[in-house]
Image 1 (spheres, helix red, strand yellow):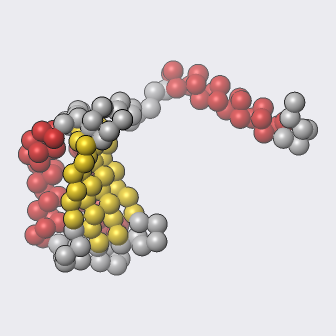
Image 2 (cartoon, helix red, strand yellow):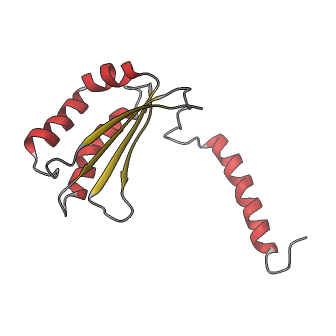
Image 3 (cartoon, one colour):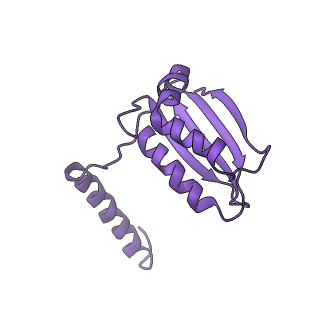
Length: 141
């Protein structure tokens, strides 16, 4: 039995868990998590942006992320932007797809992808030259 000091926290955690489980039945998450896929195809893009441009980058990238996470790309398992812990100008875009074709076909052919790519590569000078790299992976389980 927990001590008297800890008991309110234990009870609170239990009540919170019960409420979460019961409320999720009536109010499902508006952005349901996609199931994992065996041997997912992964793209990791690393780049460095100029200081003071993170807000603009997140705004432009956010429009593409919204598209990728929608039903327009059902085989996009995750599409995430990460900021390096020690340097907010060093970014990682982490993308997971059911297959390579879902990236090279559906995703790369989409208007939001082409719009973001054109902005990033041609219309803005936000990326530090020579800092962009792409690596492709196959997830193993």
